[in-house]
Image (cartoon, rainbow, N blue to C red; front, side, top):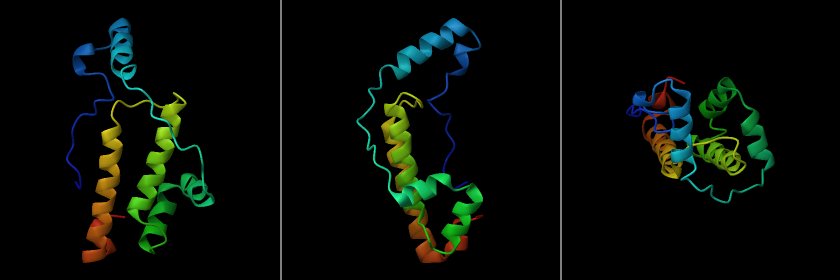
Length: 122
């Protein structure tokens, strides 16, 4: 694994179980505490193209150097923040998004130092 696994804090903890009222209370408590940040509502033609890519299309573009991991991750984070602002997608930590971009930047550095195959399998 390129990144360590940790249970996502965006999902109810196991002790909440399948009890609907406990689950609803958990969501209200956790997600209502996160005020949506103002989002960038603009979308460039380049971002529009990247948002439409399948995983295979992204991989092909990354292999030939048409996109960096950081560029793609930044675009996806921008869109996720937009959907959070619309209250259509929820998460409880903006820091997680920043870490995602940092990890993408590290992958780009590794690819620059050791070749694109070093960040695979792509």
